[in-house]
Image (cartoon, rainbow, N blue to C red; front, side, top):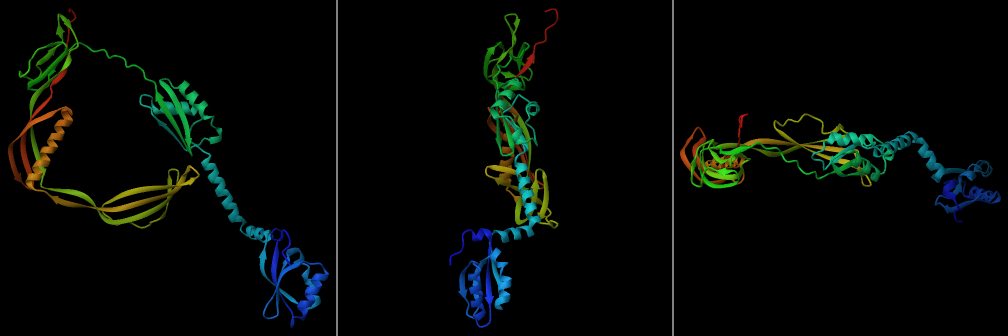
Length: 396
């Protein structure tokens, strides 16, 4: 006989019926048929017992039939929703905790956790955040309480002076405010009349006077403070403009050690695991004191995700690497090259990238106490002009 419709929904059990020499089993089957009690999948067992399936409601009616036929019954398996609900009810506290966890995740993903401001250069970030707060954009705000993004964009653009457009977008729990500042013409600075004078002793190699009267020519030797382009032109004071380059000599005292230390990894590492929630982290693994004398730590975050949302909680791994310092030796020639390159970089940093090092000459060199000492003279072509305001008396 096939199983009745909806038997798994209503629930049924598989039972083993035992009688004496099989006679009582046959009597029980006849009684079941007489009482119109449905049974199915009857399977005789080698020891004379009989296995069959019966609905839960009919199983409760078996007791008087068992007494009348002298049979005994043993439940082998249980099927159906009533048994599932019974098992779940025994674990009701676990289900309640799971439901609360899902509710908590839903609530956390429905909050704004971070508000980012991008694209602003002249406008202060705090001003943008204050205006955004007036429109309801701030941490721990419910996402469903926010206005539509096009309305927020229009309001922020209207309230933030100096912007041509402000965009608002949401990615998970992060609100990003993209600011496009308006192109406002720069106001011309008020400049007082001035000379261009030499900032060091030099030999002029190039002079171009855009405004003002040049006072020197190419190949002239000038002193520090000497006027190169005058701001007095045709009896009037003007703002001198131009470019003057010259050859300048710089003397460097260089000191380079023959042995230098470098930090390297030893290969030993330890891991520590943390469960983080926002800015709070709880260590769950990797306990114990780290015996390394020198370390470097690398942190990796693995946030929980739901669809395209990154939740503000997850797993954080800290990798602690053991480091040590090793001594590297270099020859005197390599130390000398390193010192000269260091001095050249210093010249370019001080006087501009358009500075040209024409020649270098080692005036003195010696090795002592594990170091190389040098005195080097650099011949450099650089910009030698600097501004000097023209002070006019009240009577002029």
